Length: 65
Ligand SMILES: [Zn+2]
Image (cartoon, rainbow, N blue to C red; front, side):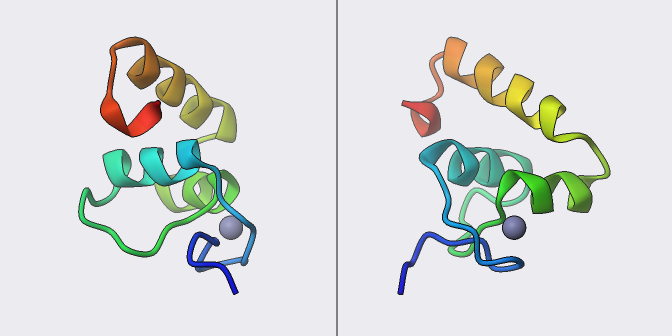
């Protein structure tokens, strides 16, 4: 049993996936989605989310260490 798994499909999550979920959906979230499920929820592509992660990492966001 893992705390950090996607609540939609059960995939295990990376720190980046948790970080982008907090950024895009809810900073105080305790359940998260993997990139594929989050992309579907936000009607955007997985690639777009990856770009956002890169962007936040470069701007020094603490969620993407
Ligand atoms: Zn998922």
